[in-house]
Length: 438
Image (cartoon, rainbow, N blue to C red; front, side, top):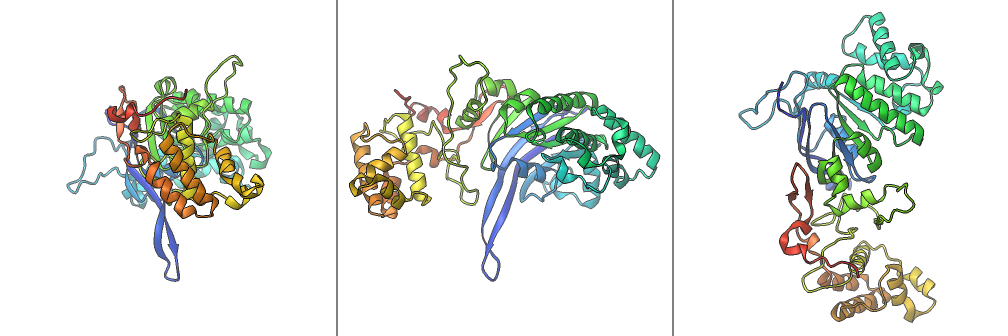
């Protein structure tokens, strides 16, 4: 038995080139996955969680080589590959990103994927039994009677019957199709299963059944799982550890119970606050994430979450209420992104001299900031906006309302027992700069 993790992901990147012009020149790239690292131990379930658009599904397809990574390593130590050491040139023989066709085919015996919508991955012209058995045929099992026996046994293990072998996909419900998808993923007896939102399209009762089935199958087959979801409540139920992903980067990772009990990154806090609370007497704070995930083609500098963060750090010497400071950051970001329709605001205001007040109202800014200097800066910027001079407004806002969060890319802070997070609030020199709301 080896102490190596089954899977090591090191600085994985997947960038999609942006091309323009007659010569189809690359002018940029969408950084869907931008340098993520984690490990999965044998028998472990790691949850990869984040909002839609954060890059978690792209990470999954890059790990299993459905897409070729742009950079980084995916080292798979299963399938008899354990114990390998790096080559003289620093490359690793178990790096999936460098596998040739023969190695990749062997790798796909050991690593399988379950998708969110099983219907899209089944051929409607083939019986479900044939679809599951096809994997065995591709990997050299020519005995059709043996293939059928294996598939019928698997169908029973996932809660269906052997007689379902000859039925077609349209004859099954969504939950039943996901059971068949699990059978197909297990038919080659893999060591790792990558499950991409496997229950998000299912009803609550069916979701619970599938989650229970996944746990049972993991125990029975000795599987490791990479479980991808946007739902923190699902993650808590099935995962040993959690990696939280935002805009192509991992911002926090640790044991599931530790993450839920003591989240260290503001984005993790926001995701946890979205979990419905069954107790009507509970007073847990709900943290609303304003705006949308920024464009991965041009992500914010520093901490990528700072444009939406409820704990974004204030510059030295500024002491506004945190909610007001967050509103100023949101205003500045939306002005820079040209997302403010001053003409529409002018129409709603009804009078030219009411435009500035209307902008304050739209961004939940008080009519008078508590800091006189900050108030003068904001008033000058709003004057420019009201005069349709957005460039002048952003110049003023950029000069005065700058957060340390955008100036420094945060390093990981170790909170003990493998729990790490990337937030500059954990640096002693800035921790005291975040005042609480009154």
